[in-house]
Length: 378
Image 1 (cartoon, rainbow, N blue to C red):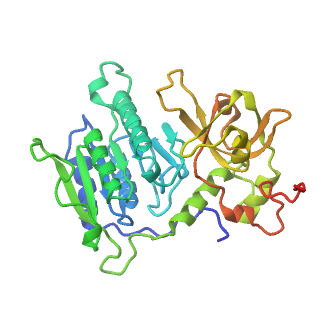
Image 2 (cartoon, helix red, strand yellow):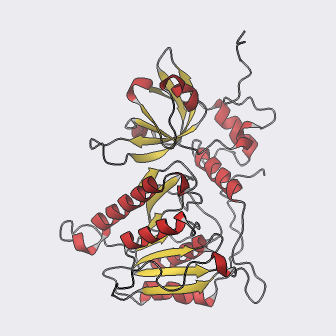
């Protein structure tokens, strides 16, 4: 594993099955331009939800100038590092459906884990808040309030956890978002699929439901690959490294993990006064005496608090806590977030998104996160 996530040369185009193409076309063209469609994509793990979502984005962009993308998959997000739920406005076609790319979201929240299992309530709250924001700014019902806003179609990508609590979360999401179209992707292992029909609706519910069921596509009749299966943890590590690669100019020659490790180890961090930062642990409780120990050498969400304590803090990016000087009262942080934005940050959100181990184990690199300068406890 030597190269970073974002390759410059795209891989060969993948084959899109005819039923996928027909499904995307029906969403984009069989509906009125106003209101635009809201399409939610669901299915089991490795069914092709992300690939179909990317393809649908491209089809919608042939009709609309911009498309909103609500990413609820904290483990394998489309445009952000892992641990986020986000709403991103997309205005450019994706040339290669196999390659994810980082984009700056319109709005995002840091959940801090790669699965919603640890706190389904907080996860759903973040998703619903982003949905509310989309409705407020990009839906017809509020166009009279803000006529300058453009109505945008919405694509909602969902996690592959569709059993047990994961199923309940998906049902709640479907009921809250109330999409105009639901695309359900089935895989060959029928026991892992979602129930048949409009499974999220109550029996006495009336109304037209645009439910589109398609099959997962592994290979076509010519044995061409459709879905690229990758190791989830590896993909997350690569995405985190690609994110922190943004700390450096694009023309700087950093193309391998070793080069990135050396660059981060020698990169000058930002200094933030401890007194201006609130530290919030998202999924555990830490004694105040252990606060700095838990924070040092970790990845944190950089967030901006609201005057309303009930509102979720908006996240502007990730940072690596490079070190803490308790005597000077300073936090040292490495982040690609611009200084003008970083100055607004007043909350560090600590979850379970970790620095990739491969960055800490590069031979010949004195990592700032692994120190030999340890005092004896005797």
